[in-house]
Image 1 (spheres, helix red, strand yellow):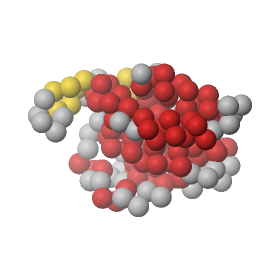
Image 2 (cartoon, rainbow, N blue to C red):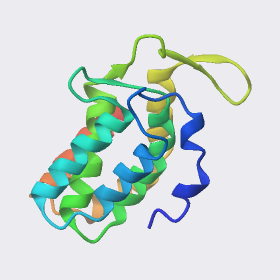
Image 3 (tube, rainbow, N blue to C red):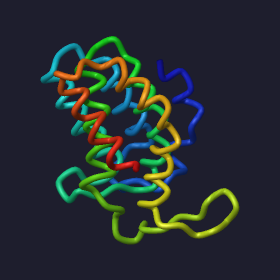
Image 4 (tube, helix red, strand yellow):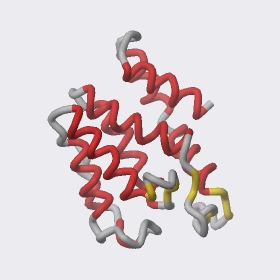
Length: 155
């Protein structure tokens, strides 16, 4: 899992100035290797700080590149890894906003688009994987509730 993470030029992407060049992949790797819910909560906060400012509820364009790895975590065998990834995605789409000065990006064709729209579209592009995970989750689980919340945010 996360085999292609080193293929992303993380240091070239707009992100918090306080980040080390490898902060985002290190935070994502921490999340995938947690062993309990306490570790998962710590990794969740580290990922949100790597992508933006967890306290202020903001994110930078680097968040777009983290989405595929967070989605990949939905296939993990540990429920607290899946839930932590879902918590990050739900917060990014539902409660956070783009950091001031980074509210728009240029897409692959050079057109300026709002970062929040680009992030929404990036997550929505994984709708089949999200739906598949929801069909496998127990309807009585926290994971199912988070998946339902995420689906509502991308609709």
